Length: 403
Ligand SMILES: Cc1cc2nc3c(=O)[nH]c(=O)nc-3n(C[C@H](O)[C@H](O)[C@H](O)COP(=O)(O)OP(=O)(O)OC[C@H]3O[C@@H](n4cnc5c(N)ncnc54)[C@H](O)[C@@H]3O)c2cc1C
Image 1 (cartoon, rainbow, N blue to C red):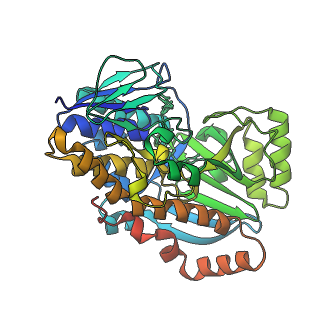
Image 2 (cartoon, protein in one colour):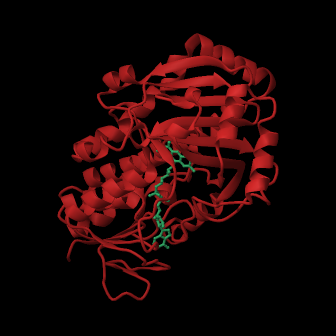
Image 3 (cartoon, protein in one colour):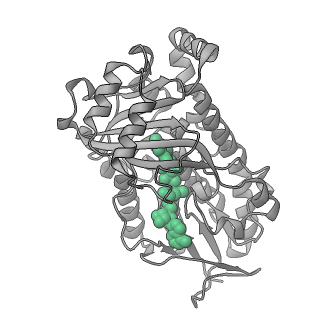
């Protein structure tokens, strides 16, 4: 049987998997519903776990002019304007043998797309996939004539195809839920922001029921701003499924002014510097109960947010998508097509515990960032006393987990 591999979705997970699969000499078709790889999304941070892999794929030269190497991640109290802790990212990079980068999602997507296509992957834009026909020996997509030896479903957080790959119990146990949190985001030319916001660091500002994450991208030419707010109801805030819902600007400004009341003048100056906010309702699922739930057909695998959507409070969703592709490549190396089903199960076993831990930690971080009362007081003291150690999360960046 031919090593024909289909991938649904040309986001981080799908494109990274396409690159890896081409390096295994498979024939690769990537089906993407958007007619073009548009400039959607916002900044993402990539820790050494992900940049080590990107470097091994030879993407350093393409990424360097687009990314920023922030000097530190800083935790701030958004009410008092006090810096609570700082994690030195040059030292972190030295400890883990790879840098910490901030980059626009669209820039990373372009670099991955170019690398995958140069390696020979076929990218089919404007081609949504609605259904998988999973048979013991092959897979077909919708009514397309081609058969594939396997399919990777990488269609993102809203994944319509996830239900066809997961076990039915897992599907019932892990419904997609609105987290109760909304992300307001903006991308500003660095030249347009107040001097105190021309950052070379990643700053996290925390207040009861909200936090803001601000950092430079695009070689330092743009400032990425995200304010994440716990809401009772998001009915008036643009519930579009997507990265870029543009809600009623006046309602958004009023809502944000209300949420940020009582915060320090520095945060108020940031809000005032943003002419227009995009709104993102944050969705997530709890982790599946075990690796055996990852695939009911022997010929399909879930990758990225389709497999393990998470809240952005550990900044690791894209990193996990890159790890997925890397581990898929390791697991499938030198496998005959007849061995693919067993190897795909081995892939799920290799990934399950780690991504579940990242999903759970990200959800827990939301509570820590938005803490009120005594928890907030304790958090601030812990950060003052041991911030660098608490912020590093060494288990994330080490070279275990087949990385
Ligand atoms: C506010 C916020 C901040 C974040 N910050 C970070 C961060 O700092 N660091 C980090 O690592 N991660 C971060 N993330 C998460 C990260 O962006 C995602 O985890 C990552 O983009 C997931 O990649 P993916 O390829 O799985 O999905 P996506 O990038 O969503 O790609 C899915 C692709 O599938 C396509 N598609 C969908 N349905 C179909 C279909 N039926 N047929 C064909 N194609 C289809 C879509 O058009 C899309 O191109 C953040 C997320 C949010 C919301």
